[in-house]
Image (cartoon, rainbow, N blue to C red; front, side):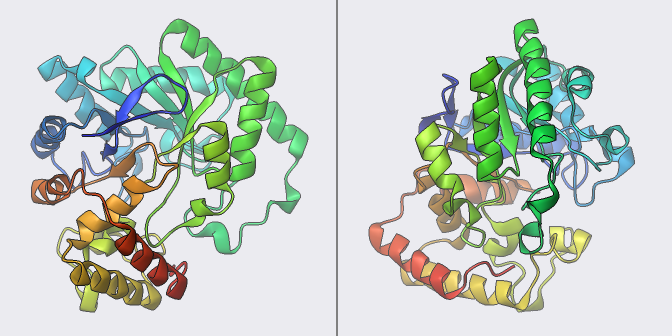
Length: 346
């Protein structure tokens, strides 16, 4: 498995990252532990989770269960050293910590809680799940309006958080800092404030990115390339749409759509038309749609590691069977033509 640098952290992460958001809900403990071992055997050394997981749906009574599932595997096997581990601090309005926003005051105790659940003494990459001020993510790009933001308040918040994060780095509780669901401006400001005050530098941005959601191509990609920050795409399979399993009205039992209905706003008529167009490209070149979709994400020049999730072990094996796939210029050109014809289908 190809390894890539994670920003300027000095860490080398596998180009595929094991996503875990179904562990403790759709994926039972034994199956989750099997997935962790299969992924490692395939050459993956990078695992991502969050304090609010599992999802589909998020429930107050299950917050933290995914970290507990992972922690039990570490305790059982003693193989924490085999993994670069990333987790996230939930933003304002989440079911974790009664919805309180991220602040310098919440960071220390939130990290300590994750460390206990994960049964580890350090987190390699600690990320903010979404910014307090709001985000273009989660289909909010159509209506998000930043005009009422208080710039000084935002900058003061960043300085407050970076001070608290540096204290956690000094304690050895975390190694590096990353963002999630962040904008080009937000990423740039976090970098600027860290440079001014000496706090931990942003090493990565974890945003949704796939053949069907290419917002990062506009503006954010330029920041990532010029500032040496790695993108960690989540949902490279567009929440399962790019597996083709939802085409023609199908809703498999136990699937994400069966649990959430509209796939977080991704279920639209245009989405299914777009999947059909990408399926046609895969068929033309004799490729598996799932493997082609992930290979597209992996090959983008600003991507450090693409985060995939698999509810079941057969789904995981299908993804791993395509590890290392590289798409030709002809295939990439064909994918870009579909994107031009079907931009932002949800």
